[in-house]
Image (cartoon, rainbow, N blue to C red; front, side, top):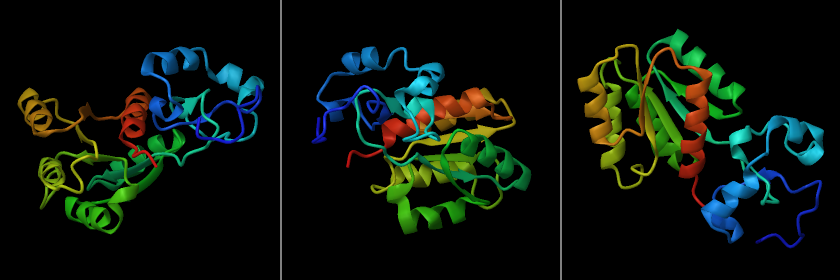
Length: 194
């Protein structure tokens, strides 16, 4: 471990970015994380060190707390932006919302290092979510950021087109809490090692 203090029985659950950060393999990391649920966390494993950390970001092998994942949410509909923002924030994400693909590119040009995930609507005026996806994947600086496309239309051709272009996932609206849980795993995996 990179920490100078060995973990104690009451402080061994915290955030981690990657199992290799601890010098162990993925299977060992998974076996040590197995059984870490909300009940055991409430019973004192986590204590008060990080009460707002999403469970998918916890690892019983780390002694450091990392920042929550930062998601850039893009949708031209105010109602949909509010819904996705609330869902993400309730899962303890940091969320930045914008109403167009062009504004998303502006945000990314100012601070793309902090964004771990982009979630965008497909149908937007001026620049569609598909166009935003293409711009992100064509950029050497941005291509590593996972992009998730959302749409209220379940069009297999559209879904295939987005996935072929490099989208991590295609969600059908309305987005559900279970969708957010899957997104957390993608955002954590995308976080750069520091």
